[in-house]
Length: 58
Image 1 (cartoon, helix red, strand yellow):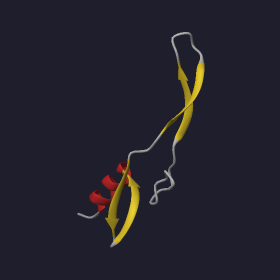
Image 2: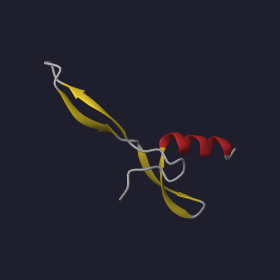
Image 3: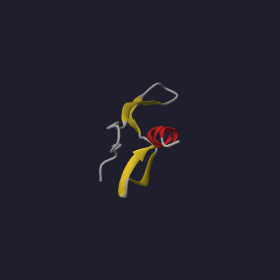
């Protein structure tokens, strides 16, 4: 199961989590993925894509 938006292709960002002593440990910022039916097919899309799809559907 990939954590990638099937509409725009965005994926998680990587960076460092910093403790009080400034020790760096790797972390990831994941997208807000939602499973929705788009054109009759189940897809995983990020919320920014869902907003754009809803806006253009009007």
